[in-house]
Amino acid sequence: MKPHHVQQQRQLATEMDQYERSAEFVDVMLAPVWTALDPVLAEALRGASGPVVDVGAGGGHGTQVIARAMPQTEIFAVEPSPGLRAVLLARVNEDPDLRDRVTVLPSDLLRAALPPRLGTLVAMNVIGHFDPTERRTIWQLLAERLLPGGRAVLNLQPPAEPIAVPHTRFSELRIGRRRYEGWGRAEPAGPEQVTWHMTYRVFQDEEPAEEVEVEYAWWVLGHDGLKAELAEHGLHVRPTGPADLGLRRISRSPE
Ligand SMILES: C[S@@+](CC[C@H](N)C(=O)[O-])C[C@H]1O[C@@H](n2cnc3c(N)ncnc32)[C@H](O)[C@@H]1O
Image (cartoon, rainbow, N blue to C red; front, top):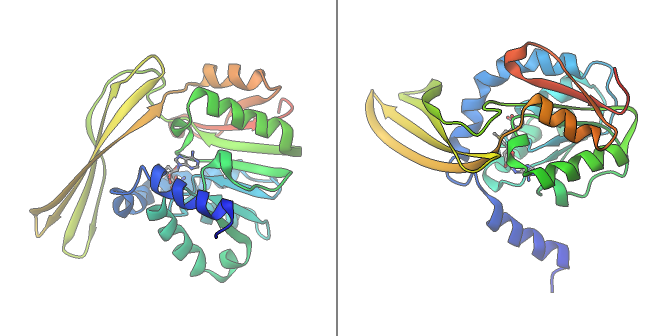
């Protein structure tokens, strides 16, 4: 008989992998995004303390940035998708420094076994996965567990309202003979939600070779909405870095 939490983990893994079919493409397609995010997140983390939680760490692009920006700090990289977690674990394992101080937690953030006090929480390209109730649980967690001077850093991604976003190519890269394209379009799905329809196209020697379509729910959130939610928990927010990257820095006291 396995302990209860082990069984529960197995159940969660099968229920929750929204990235099961796209994991193969998501990490490589996020690489160019991270070229832009890297220095901005690093700057937003200047002077921050540990331990750090990397929420929805994906394949670990952000985890690497955090580790470089915050040497010697312990990092908890929370990643529920087995597909993306495989990329993350391999990336962490290949770097002796990351291997020493990054713990990969195979869990949803709200069920993760986090340290009782947190220096920093980073949530990049992920906040739209949490519905309004779940977001409030995160703000509550920050209010209760952030150490004095602690902070959270996240990015808000458009759309901030439930509006349609036309079919757009957001990523393209070549690996060997194959060229990969990532396309997305969104449609409104209620007062606070859109559905993203993603298409990943693969060409070999310029001939179509593979096409994968996935969709996922995304809860929209703009600056004013975020500010109002945080205020309910005594938290403050301010933009940081170039406006088009949407980064926000959250703290207990106004900065
Ligand atoms: C678009 S990816 C971003 C990955 C990474 N942060 C990056 O920017 O490269 C969103 C990630 O959030 C994760 N995720 C979704 N729901 C989550 C939840 N409830 N708790 C923690 N992570 C979650 C997904 O599995 C996925 O890895």
